[in-house]
Amino acid sequence: MNQRAPVTIFIPGDASAVSVGADAVAAALARECQARGLSVRIVRNGSRGLYWLEPLIEVKTVAGRIAYGPVRAADVPSLLDAGLLDGGLHALRLGDIESHEWLRSQQRLTAARVGVVDPADLDDYIRHGGYAGLSAALALAPQDIVRAVTESGLRGRGGAAFPTGIKWQTVHDQPPTQKYIACNADEGDSGTFSDRMLMEGDPFVLIEGMTIAGLAVGATQGYIYLRVEYPHAARALAKALQVARERGYLGRNVRDSGRDFDIALRLGAGAYICGEETSMLESLEGRRGDVRVRPPLPAIKGLFGQPTVVNNVVTLATVPVILARGSAFYRDFGMGKSRGTIPLQLAGNVKRGGLVERAFGLTVNQLVYDYGGGTATGRPVRAVQIGGPLGAYLPESQFDTPLDYEALASKDALLGHGGVVVFDNSTDMARMARYALEFCAIESCGKCTPCRVGSTRGVELVDRMLASLNGARAGDIALLNELCDTMANGSLCGLGGMTPFPVRSALKHFSEDFH
Ligand SMILES: Cc1cc2nc3c(=O)[nH]c(=O)nc-3n(C[C@H](O)[C@H](O)[C@H](O)COP(=O)(O)O)c2cc1C
Ligand code: SF4
Image (cartoon, rainbow, N blue to C red):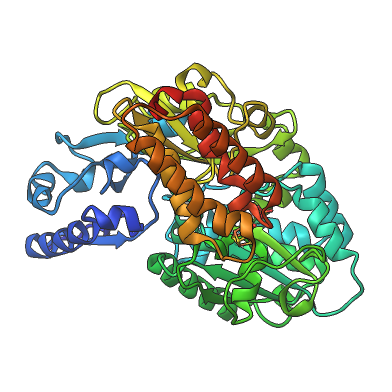
């Protein structure tokens, strides 16, 4: 009979880890330990974000959390033979995960607990510093909470980088009425996954951030608008919302403060445009996700016509650390007007993809080579696309650009939600420009002509260039540039307005592909 206390083993329940076999590993480990009479406690945590090593499992030992990866179900017997439960030696052993170079060099503030805690365990969250931000906020007047966020320099991480404190101040200043916090968890950008990782790996931090936002602006109801393609996040959030409610962190009289705040979860239906904030509000209200004309701003007339804070998951999940550790602490990270840290998401044709949270200012070179290790194919990198499908392509000659809002803007690029997708030198950039236009044509809500018609004409134009045996005609390039001008200047929202970024950057930096 084994007298040992159960050994804790962490196996990510994160969707990416599951997609490469984490569930099978968890099942194999439970089965094999039972057969051997070994007592283990399996915790399905989030991913640490070292995705090339998933499924990455960790064993809690006196020497720290010893990691192994990538583990397949078939590796389980040999791992146990090697003394897995004591952190024994094995070909897959990675050592103490906290000292892994990929993690050690990061500055994790927003994603500090992702991959560390049990996402379903509120006490674990609190043990790791959770709800310290709410405690601090409850001791402050609403205006002082708003001031703390303003002074932190936090800007929206959903794409537009608008100062969060200013948005909150506008909602705070509206007359007392029903106000809302609407969390944008649509995360439609290609190559992005930081919202998902947070919601799956540390859902309480989003709930805490939304609660603080509610206290700050006088909102009693929040909504999380979650893309339907994230079932794992939906389950993690539903569980965390239930626990928070049962324990008095949500609902009436939050933490005996005399203040009410609750959150409802709503699922989208798979439209990229529903990530645009006014379209998201339409969808939340039960209508087709058409873009609304602004003004009025959602902060003044938003959900159900009431003042509404619309913020991205990462933005809201960053608020607790600001309240807990102070705005000056957060502000000290970053450069220029880009303060704090950003969870960058490295994806595409890259050797080591995953989550890298660092202060603003890391260069593209550092991200792609130091963290990413170059391309997965081993071929030279040709370009990166930053900021989702509407982001610009950067050529290698610009890889010394710091990942910061203003530095990228000076290169006619944008940081967006922080997704960086790597392409090798086999990529045809004219086809990528065509893809951007086609994406816009498919996802356009159809409300305005430059986007609805322009995107389709753009696809036809690039097709004509690609089909021409004699190379693109000079007139076609000029016409494509003119079309981009019309879309950028005449579109009602960012879908049509930003599609010119990938098209123009491909034309500018990779013009040879159009001939
Ligand atoms: C076409 C389009 C899609 C967008 N998709 C998202 C999205 O998936 N998630 C998100 O947070 N913001 C998205 N945005 C930005 C939102 O409109 C809005 O700026 C953001 O939710 C505000 O939150 P933040 O200030 O915290 O960034 C999108 C914008 C456009 C134009
Ligand atoms: S730019 Fe496109 S998506 Fe945006 S409102 Fe116009 S038609 Fe709709």
